[in-house]
Image 1: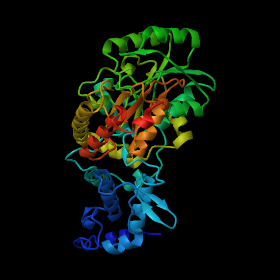
Image 2: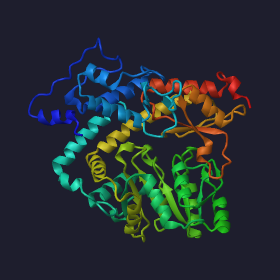
Image 3: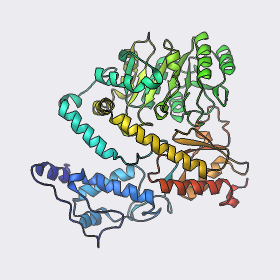
Image 4: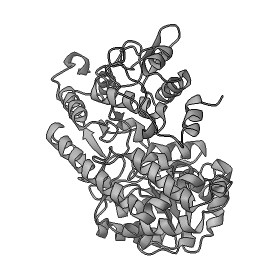
Length: 480
């Protein structure tokens, strides 16, 4: 069914756009006037709902107006509100209960925490509107491109302009790279699944840090690969431990995150990177370097792939330093590798990246929008790390430019119990078990700082979690 809101917008392009009629006396206090000139109305409703949840205007368990009632109050089509509520359910902002209506999660029977410290994503950039950047970027892109071409199938490692833009984006950490070595992918997850399927057969060994990215663990499990942990110290992988693992396990590859490691936040200093590269070279070990965070650092250390151009794959997503919505990651293959091989493996999984999103990412890089957005995200991330240092208990680990904190727990807490106690208070966090390679994770949790939109609400969440960890609340539930 065609959204009549879209039809109205199409038919009114030649006439001035007027604000939607607004009656403050009959409209919920979490939403203000809508304006057809400001973009799709459903998106404005969704944004207002998301903001109200983040600011606590809408509390866990609170019931929302019915779709029909809200449509009448806002003087918009029912399909507009239906679309907004549907997307809100998809994002976990609301729960729908048959016969009762829609509610904010976190109340009785709700499953989603109101304050999400579990999802690792960039914080909202203060002073910038992502919606406005997307709108301007697409307008600029469509003014210079053929829409029919952008909306067609694009099979292969990527369009030449996209691959060139990728090398410009990667240069601070990777150095100068031939664009023909780059493959454009629809995010890190399919890239890792494709690489693992290329490099190893079921039952073969992939080495990794003891706690690592759950998406890598999920892809390895789906492919029936054996993941073996390599010991780490404060500087990252231990070279001697890596050498022993190569001797005894005969691994097919090493998966590693040298910069702001997820979840522990460790960052390998340059000297350690050279040591790890020397071991990998000596054992002819293929390296998959997952590098989502280097661009958050003003002057990142040289990537492992720059030290191992013949044997390392470098994977860099835009999801953690710009926005997950671009669904774009860049994989740089070793010098002697044919990028078509990876492109073929990706086709079996996802066919292709969305050409429109790849082109938008390229446009943002070319015009400087990506760098401008990155700067705003860096500043906000640093402010949030400052909050975390001030509010969380002593002993936490973090990088000053990172998006998360690794928080060890005192002996009184078992991480599973803490997760449940935090959930009862409307807080979502990730336990160490989610990252463990061998199931023997430490008692710790990962705290993500970007998903809570409002900084004041983030401070409230961090303060509440700190009180819980320190035993100031939920004491009875903390004892073993």
